[in-house]
Length: 99
Image 1 (cartoon, helix red, strand yellow):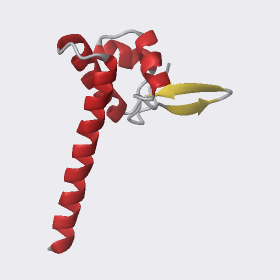
Image 2 (image 1 turned 90 degrees about the vertical axis):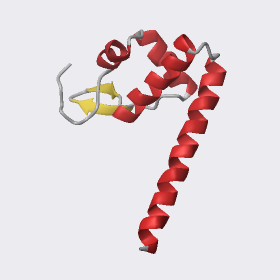
Image 3 (image 1 turned 45 degrees about the horizontal axis):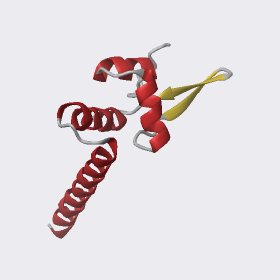
Image 4 (image 1 turned 180 degrees about the vertical axis):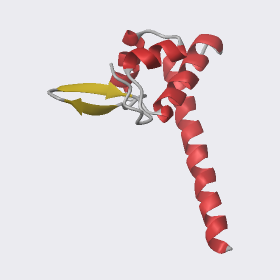
């Protein structure tokens, strides 16, 4: 697949980058952990993962493989992390607006 230099990555590239299988990526997608974009190229559509998707996949893989979380536990931990990140971003925005 061509590199479109759009900051998005194909399934094979992502699987190799994080050291997992395409099947596992698809499974995580089916569970809603990953939400790839779809890029139209002619008459074909390709899944393309953002850096945010890759970061989520790396975290889930680490939690499941290294820290021995169940997949359900890893998903809960991921949600907690995303919520805390959103909260800190909101606090940063409020701080900037007050100045």
